[in-house]
Each structure stands twice: as structure tokens, then as C-alpha cells.
Image 1 (cartoon, rainbow, N blue to C red):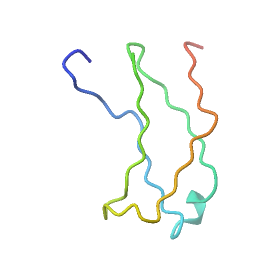
Image 2: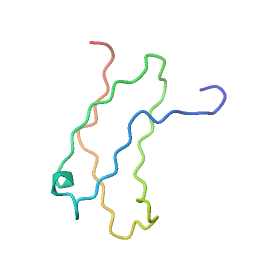
Image 3: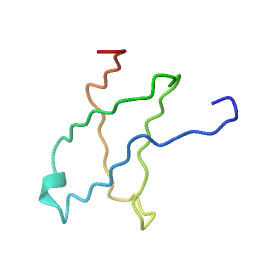
Image 4: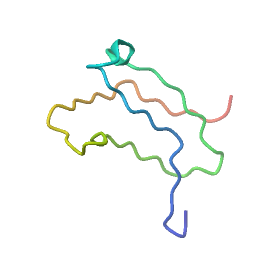
Length: 67
């Protein structure tokens, strides 16, 4: 936005050690507002603020307009 603010349109906290369903590749689809002009992808540490054992992987990221 022109005023420097932003919105989080998707957030997911994974805990593969204690939640088996969080293991492996995770798929998601996010519908962005039509006026979105930029997208930023972030990987951040969890609530303990400790990223020592955190891993990440981004794969097959696609953007499309309309349906």
C-alpha cells in the first residue's frame, strides 16, 4: 500500500515433531485480493523464537490472474 502497511493473507504454523500431519510437503492455495501488487513470502521461527532446528522449502510457486 502507499501508506506502507500490509496484510497477512495466509499463515500456517507447522509442528512436524508433535503433529504427524505436518510432515512432508504441504500444499495450499491463497486467493489474493484483486488490488494486490506485491507478494512477500516469509519463514519465521515459532513462538519460542528459536529457529535452530527449523527447515523450510518452497516449491512450484505459481501466480495466476483470474479464473
